[in-house]
Image (cartoon, rainbow, N blue to C red; front, side, top):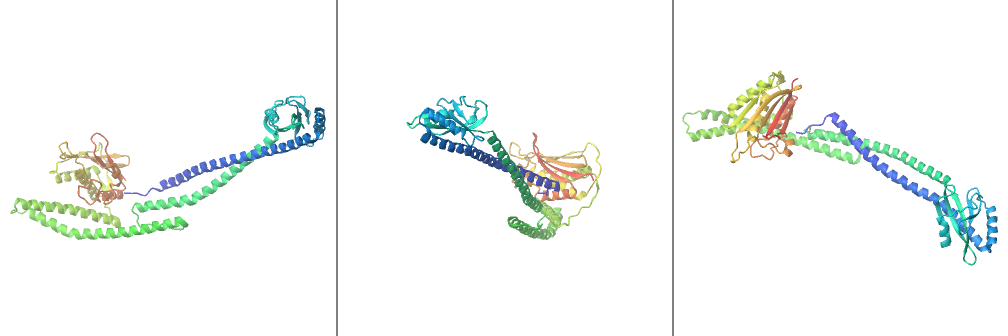
Length: 489
């Protein structure tokens, strides 16, 4: 039988749902924003360097074209023109202008600091060999400073390269500017991350809280609280879902009412004729003039009438519980004495059925507990009936071995318990959780019954504030154990 989860479990479920959702959101959002920030940083950084490179490339092409067309005649003319060009260089505060020979030696520099040194870098020889402007990003050997440089060949009128004009820019300021831009991008990413996370958190609260609340009420419905309605103040899909659940709950409530009324009516109608059949059967079976076959037939009628009477009583108890008319008559009861009395009377009933009942008394005297002795006796007899039906283990020759049932009484903390163990084949694990649901019979349907006996037992124990536990035994002897746990107070 399904039971509704306690409020603490639901609170933990809400927190778990929030945490798992937020964790997944953090991972997805952080990875996405990190990727976007990296891509933007690379694009912006490349655009910064590309802008400087294109500017230098443009200046180098313009200067090369000017020298090649108008100034270059002899080498001395080239040298004089280079000096004049350098003196009139307008961007000397931003860039360094260099004129170099074919060996990479710096002949003239707008800064004067590198003149006379060899500034050969890979771009020099590539510019000479390709006769095209070539850029270089790397380190200046003299100062270990990061630079960007564009080298353009100066081509004589006869088509030969007579020198190199080179524009050089230090990258320290540009690197700092790029780093600041990248840092700004990542700071904006952090801000966006926090904003999105806040919005996600608000969204989760708006969605997860209703879902958990609806799930909680659905659990109540599944536990038998048919007719329970969910207050529907939600919107769109959740609104439609709540309407469907409310309608389902009402349909289940109506079906449960019809079923209960039908069972109650049929049970009352069967009770009177069964009482008459049992009474007349008991009268006739003790007649002196009956032959053996007739007596055996009457005994079969009595046995089936008693079985049907028990089934009717279970059905009536079930309807009383469903309608809320089931009451307990509580008094102080000695649990060991009640169990012993039940076993003693039950042994007389089954003494001809090859059933062995064993009783294990508690090690110490147990205090009395508040309980309804007649209802607990009903629970114990029902469990013993099931044990005698399903606790028989086939022997190697194909016949059933004697049925052995061990009943134990003890205490644990503030509770007392009664365990009933048989040594049969047990219950399939996939059916164990359904065994105390009403009308559930399981795969072993060869034995007749209504399927509500254990459901009634579970309700009676619950009314006492106790618990009914079921367990397959995994030791060498095997079998199945049912334990009734009752509170001392």
